[in-house]
Image (cartoon, rainbow, N blue to C red; front, side, top):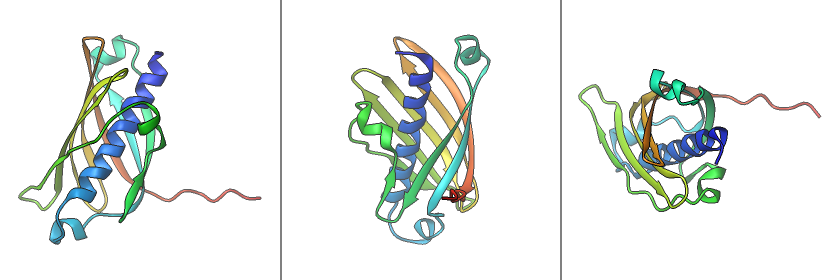
Length: 147
């Protein structure tokens, strides 16, 4: 599998998992602070991942009350997700998501989310090698195409 495909897998997996984590949070103050809609994430590899030909990438995810849109997740063979979520002392939603695919390794996304920002780390292990990334994101309004 090419590096580009692997990066896409990791990005889609993490975003899907993050959205699941947000949706799995019990109703209450934390859940009410979630900003639904499209999020734009900038995912940046650390120096070792860059040396292993891992590039930074931009990823988009749609978070809605009744689900998320992450088209590549199922296509790439990632299974059912059981996220761990919480709320930190600052009121941010915290999440840890572990994702495994028969052919695409495993990913662990860990981070925090408010109504305006999302930050965290990604550890993606495939073929016995772990690649580390950081990510930051914010709500994003897509531009409607002219017809």
